Image 1 (tube, helix red, strand yellow):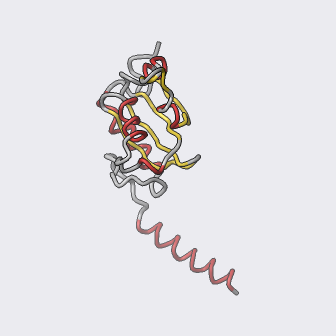
Image 2 (cartoon, one colour):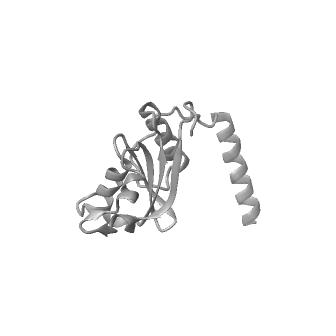
Length: 143
């Protein structure tokens, strides 16, 4: 039983998109659906083993990812084949967890959303030193 102060209580890693195609009759297998149905949190869609998109589900992780998997007009429909989820029961922490993942994978995913976390910028004097060192290194290597 997770502690009440735990932000992320469960996770699933690299499940195949095909879980949304498994049916018993015309319905999804209940045990699979139940594993994510009434859980809220953050998910990562992957193209092979590369993170492609990070999103959140305020109501049901199962439904939100199902939309990406089965709706042909979904923006990300053609671009992913695996997913991971992070169950965040307290909805007040969902933006924070999503923001951490987006910030950690900046430039790697298709997310256009900015994390709702203040960035710490590299101090200008350090940028100047690094730029100067890079120029010196490039000059020495090019000699």
